[in-house]
Length: 166
Image 1 (cartoon, rainbow, N blue to C red):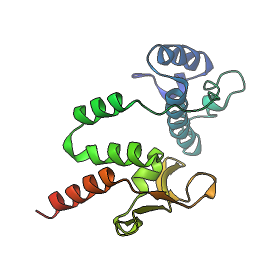
Image 2: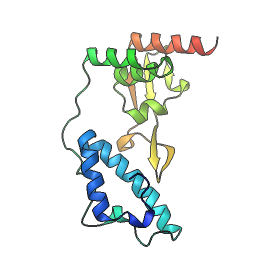
Image 3: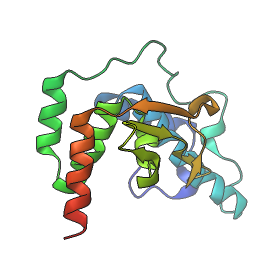
Image 4: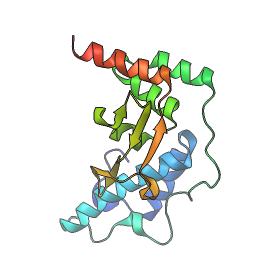
């Protein structure tokens, strides 16, 4: 939206902006960007800088959520992404792919959730966005669960712990 003044952002501007986003982003990413913009514009409404939030218009909105199953990445793709990531983020990818966790669940893990002796990870929380703020919440569907801990993931976690204590 560039340098648009707040009062210039209306449904027409949002329609054009959405079309530009659709060239580069998928529906899920657009929905996230839309929600963030809506939060910003809602704050402007509450601060009396805007009369209404155009993101809440009945004539323009984010794309519908895409139904269907999510497909896991192939091992080759996981390895390629891991290689491209900076060292400090690689463990997050190993945890997500190796344990089958959602992003928020992987971000919500704490060291005490990992039971190396019993080879299990306790998924007790996730990090999620609530009104533009990050917070902890129960996992999706409020389903706390235990996930088997593969030896390769345990090894990667132990290596990271070792590096952190050097």
